[in-house]
Image 1 (tube, rainbow, N blue to C red):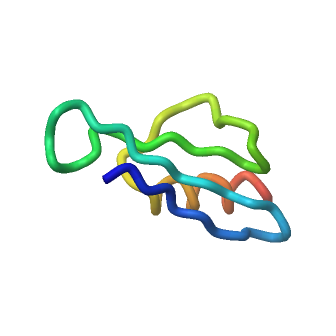
Image 2 (tube, one colour):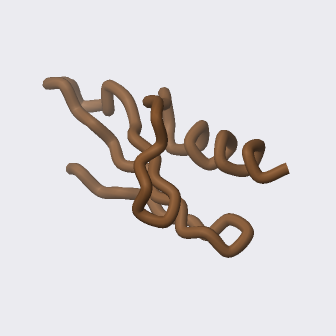
Length: 57
């Protein structure tokens, strides 16, 4: 399954997309804000959302 998780944070569309490397769990997650990819990878979708929330303070 390769389903993205979407959330709106302070008016911005945030997307977390899993990347699998042969296992049943994602190896890492990619994040994007308004279709602009974030410059790092994350261990979970929740970490993507936390990172975006922290950047907006």
